[in-house]
View 1 (cartoon, helix red, strand yellow):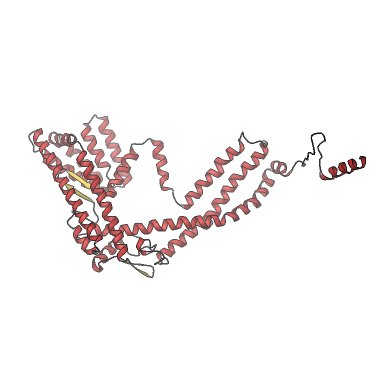
View 2 (view 1 turned 30 degrees about the horizontal axis):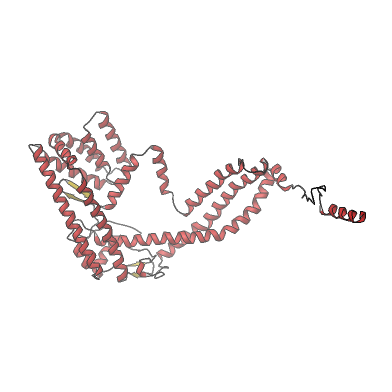
Length: 441
């Protein structure tokens, strides 16, 4: 499934909405920026561990479990001080774990990997069409069209319709309502949290930044020009990240003003070149504006007015979202609600609704894979155990015969009749003792 940039005029995906003295990026960019900032400030060990977050899925889980079985479990079995068995017996049991791990991964990959590919193929070909309750937006079929095509079509037919393989999927009214409600609720949450944060922010910090712009416009623009050159150089995210880190180190080493360092760090936290460029433009405009003021009082007045203006815009957006939510509840169509969303600057309502539906498909497909993968894994467990019981003794016989021979040898069973009588070694001897006792009586 391809996701392209939306080309429609009124429903392009939201990137950056610039206010006077502030820049508000969308929820996905906010989340990415916050995640990047948190990771960048963590110790190197934690950074390395965080890279494993991408190592998820049925196959990675099999491998991780196998590493635990094959490398960790043998240590506890071998050196279990609570066990009353001898050292060779514990070694024999411990060596069983790595072989069990290898078999587990081999059988798991041999079955789960092709099974997942089969599910993906079935989804693309429309096999899961109307498989589940449509009112829950849980259809598993992925669209064949790109998202921009779906948006264009949605505005023409006043709904969401797409093909999945040879199947035609049309979202019901209930599905449309569910997707629109979720989209509006997420936007409402974002706007509400932004308002709460802005209303509790200390105005002094923004005044300090404005005052710095007023006195240091030349220095700031010089650094912005350098950053802009790098951002526009078609460099990769990794290359830009490295560049920003180096630049920040240089500024700190030269004892640069902390405001300037904060400006560069703020730009570096933007998740991609487009939002970094937007932030540079925003700061450049702020420099021009604040450099014209003659006093701190003028700076403070401008900052206060800018905050009030931005908050009014956010409150108006929240009010409009609440109207849209009421319209969806009343049963209004996608096109009607989308037209209402045009009152919000930078809105991408239709795009967001379609992305919400596609996100539901992905979540449901992953859940279906997880459940069916577990069922399949449990089904092949007896086979894997049988293979282990057959293969392991042969491997031990060949490579560790002394351990294998000791495992096979068993001490004779001992039976005790009573404390006054000697232990009897086997049933034949016990029968002879009983017979002699009867004769003696």
